[in-house]
Image 1 (cartoon, helix red, strand yellow):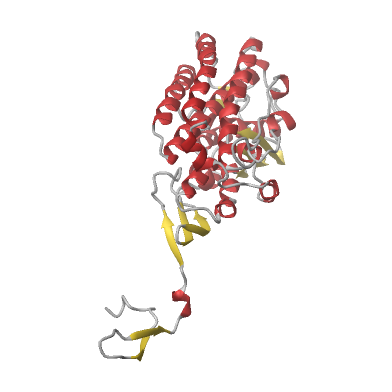
Image 2 (cartoon, one colour; image 1 turned 135 degrees about the vertical axis):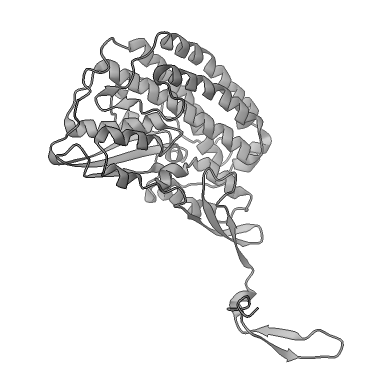
Length: 400
């Protein structure tokens, strides 16, 4: 019993009156505060992974919210120091597991920069097609799970209906539906199979009408707007201070997209718009703006895929794949790509062997989670899940 009460301040009776309970005065004034500390997680179903939030509340109002991460740490960067360059690629699949193609691409482009490889035109186009299809699939998960976070289950079913069609395309290409190891150093593992282009075009032809369904079902739903408009507003200055990128930055009204502003691969050959938050139903940079940027980005990704299919040249996808990946000694590079959740940075150092000396990854989800405490203060406890969902984090990438 003594162990249970350890650390509790002693109480002393100051006044005792007949027929009344004794008045108690506590020596520790901090226990008189109205602030309560509660935990959300680490197994909360709406936190997009294993995340614990330490929340200080004054009634229903959040005074402070601190994320605690690390529950999914898998030592990715340390593993990379003991594996040949090509064997690191499957580990990149499992960072942002909703955008594995994009992770493959970011890492491979960094290694190819070290090797100064010239990539065949057909490979470049196939990579863009796969990366943009995976961007659509990733944003579909964001749309569906965000609706479920707020309390709407049907959008989740609608989103996964189209996502399964994209996974069918991936499966017919490389045999995998979610973790691919598809984009290799110097090429891709498989060329596009017979029927891929026809099935992809058939998917794109009907996809725009599906986006209209999403908007009618959720985006312009009165309850959804009330739960997301003017909630979790991220000012531009704060976004810059925390190095927020991707849809979260564009949701605050900043037109910045690496595919257009610092193009890599062959993205400079395609026409597409960089969509931004405009405060249509609330304040620029709120939860609704961040959500809507992803909805509209799916239209632009479909537009890029259609152009890539029309321009796709012939060629051998294995022509430039090296037999032994061995960059020169004492060279290093940093390469960044526009992933569905922001700028993925890959830093690679070579010591001249076939195993990287160092691989470091800059996670866009990590910086997004870092700003959470700034944009959650003053909101209700019920708004916490809405804010987290609008940031669209994946804990597998944060923890690595």
